Length: 129
Image 1: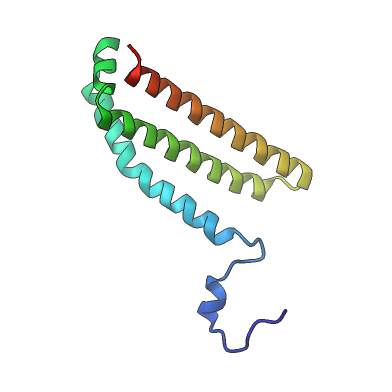
Image 2: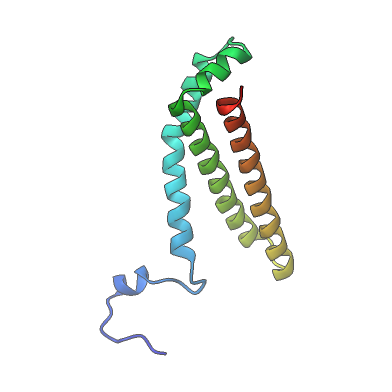
């Protein structure tokens, strides 16, 4: 199907490329990177504030909703961003289609599992007795 002749170069550029997902992937990677800036700064400040604290102080801190939710958001953004970035690296440097697909699936599952484990740990500390 031919493109309409009246489309501007910008209109064609905003469309999806030959991969049919490149722009969306690129945006997701940028959004997660932007989200990681304040979340990362918050995490560094929290670690500095909790330096030298014992487990009881950490659990008491995580019992408050804001730190627990922010920590969960940090885990989600971190592992989502990692999965997106590693997918790009795999697509660029793995040339066998079967190996490429298999590696991307393994990386996605690993990122999902690590995020789930981290979220479970935070929730257990925040909600546990």
